Length: 171
Ligand SMILES: CC(C)(COP(=O)(O)OP(=O)(O)OC[C@H]1O[C@@H](n2cnc3c(N)ncnc32)[C@H](O)[C@@H]1OP(=O)(O)O)[C@@H](O)C(=O)NCCC(=O)NCCS
Image 1 (cartoon, rainbow, N blue to C red):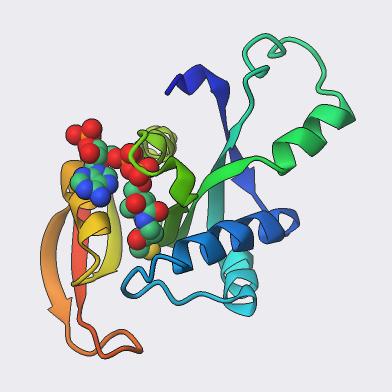
Image 2 (tube, rainbow, N blue to C red):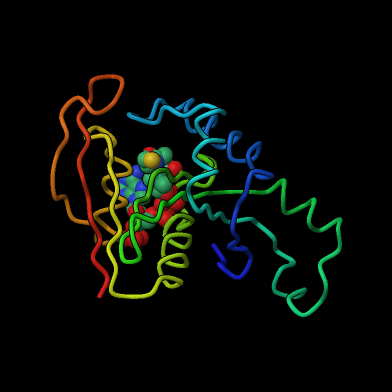
């Protein structure tokens, strides 16, 4: 993966259909605890900050030029990943949802999104999240990014699954 071909951008309600497309693709894999529908996503977009990664191989060449409207259309149809995070207070963020279009899993996409977002935060800060205890894929990802398990909430998910609480402390 060439990270210069990816555009990290803030997302808003105008990106809802693209986020929903990725969520529906992920749900075909029956990821534990990944229960989101359009109205949940819409509500979350109204309270959380959202970021995403668009595939745009032309982005590096066009950096100094005004983006044409046709390029914007191309970008809006090529969202590959997203991350939602709520501000708890000025030093604490809570990641409520993140995902990558399954066709691009394992290519460093979410690592790029997470690291790019983290670099924009002032330090010190803490990043909190919950993950379904059986979501091994996400657990592995979070542990590799330096998150530590700090607690457990029994029966947190609608399937009766437990949530593991994880924290990343940035100094
Ligand atoms: C979890 C998820 C976001 C990871 O995104 P990704 O773009 O595939 O992850 P990356 O390619 O950036 O991987 C980063 C690191 O995690 C590791 N990793 C990611 N998925 C892994 C897996 N299934 N098994 C083992 N390691 C994995 C990678 O090996 C990589 O390690 P490295 O830093 O040592 O190279 C993605 O699998 C996903 O969308 N899952 C479904 C949605 C979900 O569960 N969201 C979390 C709950 S809201």
